[in-house]
Amino acid sequence: MQKEEPENRFDSADLNDCVQCGECASVCPRHRFDQRFNPRKWMSRLRNVDGQHLLHDRSLWACMKCYRCADICRRSLSPAEELMKMRRLVMARKAYQDEATRHAQTFVNDIRTTGKLNEAFLPLRTLRLKLYKLLPLTLRMIQKGKMPPMRVENVEQMASLKAVFRHFE
Amino acid sequence: MKYVFFPGCAAEATVKEALVTSKKLFEAMGVDVQGETAFSCCGARVLDEVNFDLNLAVNARNFAIAQKKGRAILTLCNTCYLSMQYARQQLDSRPELVARINAVLAPHDLVYHGGVVIDHLVSLFDEEKQRAVLQVVGRPRFEGQRVLPFYGCHNLRPHHLVGGSRMVETLNAVLQMGGAQIVPSSVRCDCCGFHTILADGDGTLPILRECLDDAGAKGVDFIVTPCPLCHINLDLYQKESKTDYSIGVLHLSQFALAVMGYSADKLGVNRHLSKVRLSS
Image (tube, rainbow over all chains, first blue to last red; front, side, top):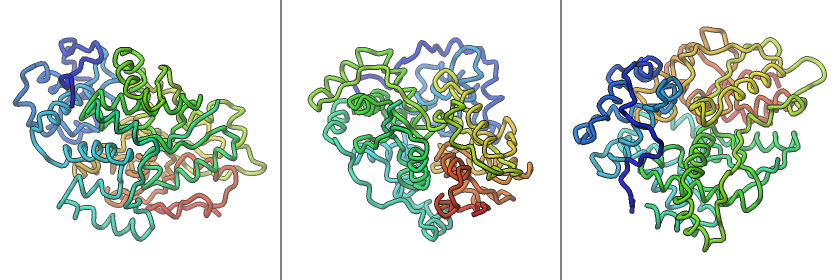
């Protein structure tokens, strides 16, 4: 069980430092292809602490974590990290469930169970019925012997990992 | 430097050829590296989208395991590299959290002492004398080949965490020793989009396509990448991206072994989905 609010202030980053210069948006590859995702606008909107309405904007998950925004920001902010904080809120509050949240939850579940990701089942658990989109790729992978193993062995010293989950999840 | 190997989940599964060739590379270079079966996933910067402190605790456990062996961590995955460097920086600035984590780890004979050392495979080639292993008699394997180095975002950024520039220099030096002509990507085309390819394939594939089209338009013969996750996108998803080109993508370890003279069948390139045109 999480002991603290998801928005841990792990850095001294203050959203009010953002001057809305827009450099983050200008270097963002996702924004270039889809203007609905705008890191500059997110930085402005995230200042609204009671961001209940923001919880449901799915463009939250469009960020590819390339960190061009973090490197270019002259105020030492990281829009990518700020978006992650909001995602933690979405996950903590179970605001909705879709491919993106299922993807994140599958990581947690896999690591808790065996310590490693089960890549064979990750697409199914993320996409569910929409897995049909990956069918041609999956067939080619099977043909080439590239399918990851269906079963993932537990890592050694699993007891210490379970203890970590008991105390911090 | 004595290392313990952290291949990451992808290299143990979908891109197993990266794991196998990396081990051959360590042997060829005489790197002192041990395996470790207790390592868990690094969290991949997805675990901390769910629970920030849990991610740090999971990483602290991995660090404690390495420190118990008195070894530094050697990883071949960019995201593992960033994830661990990030965790290290956070943990080393939050002693009260480390104390809480160590209280949980102590009954299991594990403790994180702080200051874990984490290196990426690329850095094995940092020094000229380390690159000497790539020196061959006669013509270098990739002479005349146009090669695009795909460094991978998480080896470059955020700069203060992963110290970008050495990665670029070293990878370029390795490619040059192989005789390759380096073709740089456009500055806009350096992210493969791996982290959203599953949950948002439709939105990501055009971005991946741009990377591949950029390489193809420049007449690139190969892409070489140190990151297994970039490899998954560039190779596995190449056809899905609908790029007009067909470009072979090599892991850094495969490239290095090829330069040293290993034949194509020893490199695991038959596992790739996109054709690699390599002389035997």
